[in-house]
Image 1 (tube, helix red, strand yellow):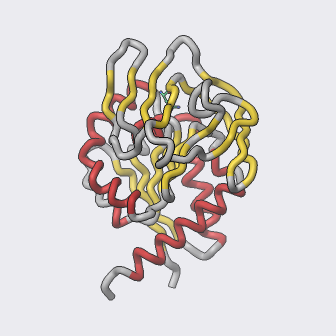
Image 2: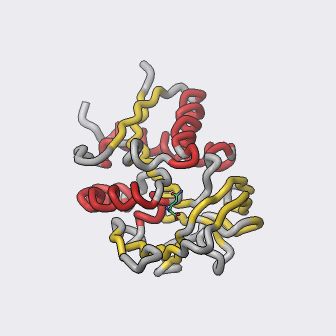
Length: 224
Ligand code: GLN
């Protein structure tokens, strides 16, 4: 019997800039090559959500306005996502989604918007100096090519806990100061890379393997 991988797509209808939904489509492709079917649930405003029901969680980028709408709804997912992340659940958060995993982001006008507060990072917007263009960075999986388009500058508050996803070869990544792109904590990845990032086969295959591993762990734990 074909096994089905369950994907939670956080706020698919609101957080989907620059073709980030392509990440889920590419993951689906690699999973199908290994014989798995996939279902994708849009977990949006007012939807119930238990992350332990899923094999993978995706959180894409969003425009500033949509991000503020999502930020207000998101707090109710803190506990379930924190447990999922701490239990090595695989998650990929891009751009606005990545920013919202942190403690806060501060807009150009000085307003502070709370994030989930799961990971020790924060973001400061500089509207007058947007970071736009092609990016290339070196990761443990190999070189990743993508593009970025963000005003938010993300900084780690605990560099012993969070590791960058890669070292910049071209572009800005997290901010103009640190020379690094994205973040990895356990099996949770954050990145500013659009393109979508998973068009890079190296990282797509690595995340696919983590998703299958989590699926096997999750289904083995279920009573028959
Ligand atoms: N609005 C955020 C920024 O500019 C995120 C952009 C995005 O997710 N594409 O930093």
